[in-house]
Amino acid sequence: MSKPKVIVTRRWPDAVENYMKEIFDVQLNIDDVPMNIEQLQEAFRTADAVCPTVSDKISADVMDVDNMRAKIIGNFGVGFNHIDLDAAKAKGLVVTNTPEVLTDCTADLAMTLLLMTARRTGEGERHVRNKEWTGWRPTHMMGTKVTGKKLGLIGFGRIAQAMAHKAHFGFGMKIYFYDPYPPSEEVINRFGATQCDSVEEVLGLVDFVSLHCPGGGSNTNLMNAERLGMMKESAILVNTARGDVVDEPALVEALKSGVIKGAGLDVFANEPQVTEDLLTMDNVVLLPHLGSATTETRNAMGMRVVENLKAFFSGEPPKDRVV
Ligand code: DGY
Image (cartoon, rainbow, N blue to C red; front, side, top):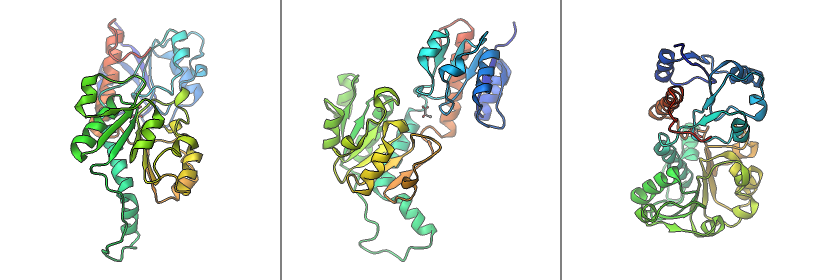
């Protein structure tokens, strides 16, 4: 039997690419140049499986091809707001993602951003590297204490729960959350977490707000000027979810005018573009979408895609089917 033809849109870790070469007729993207619409359309026309990642826009147009050969989209990433799921469904495509394997690393990075922003470590590092440091003094670069403070989580899925674990057991933080689909009492009690009835309620209560909801739909611009204004003046916003969840111009305004104290951002509305004003502000920490970027996790994400494809092509239901 011939091997399924699989097209991968970007470079994947070597171990995963090598494994794919053994089991599939795979077309890799060794140069790692993003594919354009025509190239993506060609992939849907000519491969059994297309494997995009979170920076590829898989719109209805991309899937609108005659004589489509593709039967499955094996996405490298847990988020799928870059894929038009309705269009995929209409075309009879199965869509899978890569949950679980990136939970801890993404939560670690959210905690990193929280600590970096609170303790001004990006600013401090620039200070040392620029040879501006004149020595220790009692009032130099005072930040915000983290231990024992209140952490508000918007969305309380796997990644938020992993952050709650680190924040509560590691830093003695008190956990507040809002999620329209809350987890079991057992999970809530594990962290002694307080369940709030709305996003707004969380915002007013906590010292740190960390976003863990999906992007797109009604979550676009969830953190708008009005909601930013509900946060404490001393509070810090952390976003490792999706850039569009925060209204970036409103955030710039809130940071400039002291409505909130700081922000730690790993994701942006128009990646890789970052709102110019943010680049000049010392009360923000900016990272290039690094949430899952560890060798262990990226290998595991790739292998998870492979497992989903293997199941699909052997007639089994793929574990991580979203459509
Ligand atoms: C995802 O998987 O959705 C992240 O944003 C990238 O790891």
